[in-house]
Image 1 (cartoon, one colour):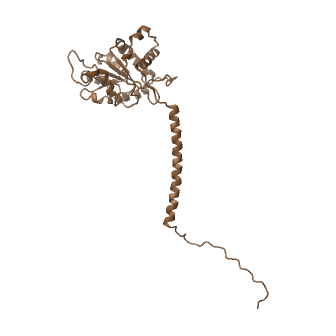
Image 2 (image 1 turned 90 degrees about the vertical axis):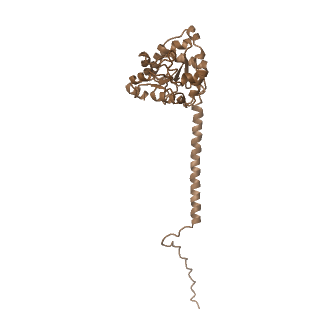
Image 3 (image 1 turned 45 degrees about the horizontal axis):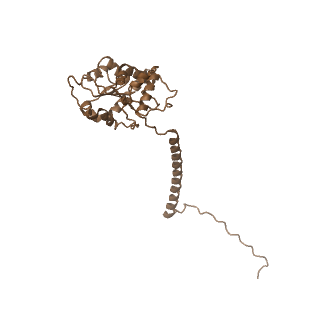
Length: 296
């Protein structure tokens, strides 16, 4: 028989985590967890890309509208406006009437920096005689003078001059183009090259004028001057970078303007025509170090 005392309930023993290494998870469970983490990371990345893309597109639409093409009349008006502004002159109505829109070789559809299609427009400027004028390499006594190109390219730097020549590479296989800039080229070397037939030449205003001054570069055949008005990374161009601009207008006034007025010379403005706001308040004077960079 019992003693009469109630039996005491025994509390269950608390769970004690066993010591030792954890039991490895099954392969199936590990794969599921890895897949979930990767999906979360991919979702985060997609959200970031979407946000960045939206911001970029909005900025481009608002801040960088595509440039509009300009008609030959608008191109001529821009060019003459730059001429009068840079030289502090006012052309008379008679002078303006004598300069026709036909003096502009229109390449306004080629606004990009790709120069591959440039030769197409140069060919069209010479019509059926393009091969005879631009590709032949022999001098013709009484017809083709040595050192007298049919096309003259004017650019702000040596590098840009070379780049533009690449757009006319197929035209210069038999008669090589002559480079007229000071970087890595002595003027005596250029004088020697100009003793041969030259169909296409490209260079900077300062060196071109020097070679004309010393009668090494002739103008008897010149039909087209191509002016590179594309802007650089600082938004300056041949007609807006102060010192180079002044050198160009000095060259133009002395040797080209009268030919343009007479209708013997056509101007090709290669690049988009500014709307008047791009260069507002921008002017820069070059020191010797800057000039070396331009000719590089």
